[in-house]
Amino acid sequence: MLAAPATGQLMNRTVTAGWSYRSFNNVIMSFDPLVTDAVEIPKSYISGEQFEIDIGDDWIEFRFYSSMHWTDTLFNGWTFLDTLDAIPDFTNDYIESMSAGITNFDSSDVG
Image (cartoon, rainbow, N blue to C red):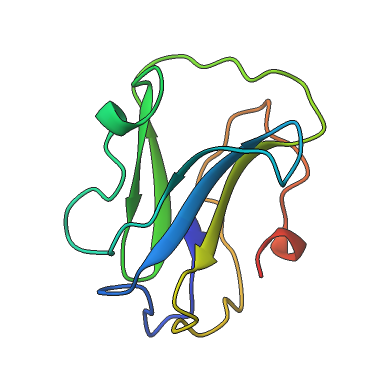
């Protein structure tokens, strides 16, 4: 889970969420949800239906429903961008829990 500034910044804003594989520029799936109280990217939208992404006013949460295996490659992950350039910069990150297989994530990956 990533945390935005404590005042909350994401509700009623549009974000671009993209899943890139092999390189940052090779986006295999992309969504532009409006952040609301509902789950923004339900598992039925994602290949394999193994997880969903919920975005709150000051957090992003991945909810996994089954074991997942990620292929080792240069880049395999999600990016979240400010679609309309309306969200203040993230100033910190907090990882509540993480799989042992995920490595190299720190505040330099938030920006």
